[in-house]
Length: 307
Ligand code: SF4
Ligand code: SF4
Image (cartoon, rainbow, N blue to C red; front, top):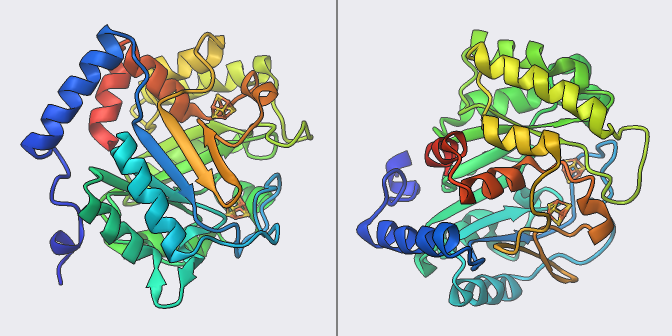
C-alpha cells in the first residue's frame, strides 16, 4: 500500500462535495455570523509515555474510550454537522481497544465522511500516515525541549524525519522555560530541512491554575513581536500575522462555539478549560479561527495551507 492509498483523497482543493460544503459554511460563518459545528476533538485516552512539566491531563487513571464509545461519538459528531475531526490525549497513539488502534479510527472517520482527520501527538509512538495532518509537539531545541518534555528530542526528531508523512506540523508551547528558544528552533527547522509544514506557536495556558511557567500579557506581547519578526525574515511560522496580533491585543472572542472536544467525562465547547481560564488563553488555533471569520488575508491564506 502506498502513502497515496493511505491518505485522504480529498486533501488539497477537495472534492466538489467538500468545496460546496465549505462555500456554504463560510457564507453562514462569515456573512451571517452563525456559529455552526466545524471541528470535533476526541481525547481517546489520557495515558501518556511522557511526563511533561505543566501537563495535568495525562495519566490521571481515568479509563480510556472503548472502540464502541469512540465510533458512537464520531458518528454523533458527524450527524451534528462536524466535518473536521482530531484525536488527542494523553498520547493518542497509545490508544487501542482489543485489535482496534487509532489508525482504524482514522479509517472509520474517513469512511463516515469527515473531510480531514488530524492527530496531536508527542511523536514517539509513530506518525500515522493515514491522518491528513499530524501535529507533533516540540518546544525548541534539546536544551529547551528537555525543560518541558524531558530527554526525548532526538527520538521525536528521528520519528518526524523518517515518517515520510508530507503534512507534519510542529506545535511549540511557549512558557517561561521555552521562551528563549523560538528563533533558534525556527532557524534549525529551516537550515536542517526538517520535513514539516512549519511551526505553530501556542502559549502555556493556565489550564489548572497559574504556575511559574505562565507568561503574562506583556511578556507574551514581546514574544509575539519576536515571532512576527521571524515571519518577516521568512522563517517557517504557521501562525498568521492576524492570529498573532489578535492574541497580542486580547481582542478576540473567547470559547469558540464551532469547536467541541470530548473525553471520557463528557463534552466541552472549545476546550476543556474553565471560563476563568479563557481570559489567559494561549491556544493560538482559536485566534486563527476568529481571524478567519473576519476574513483577515493572512488567516485565510494560513488555513488554505494547512487545513
Ligand atoms: S505528551 Fe502531551 S499528554 Fe503527554 S505528558 Fe506531555 S503534554 Fe501531557
Ligand atoms: S478560549 Fe477556548 S481554547 Fe481558550 S481557554 Fe477558553 S475554551 Fe479553552
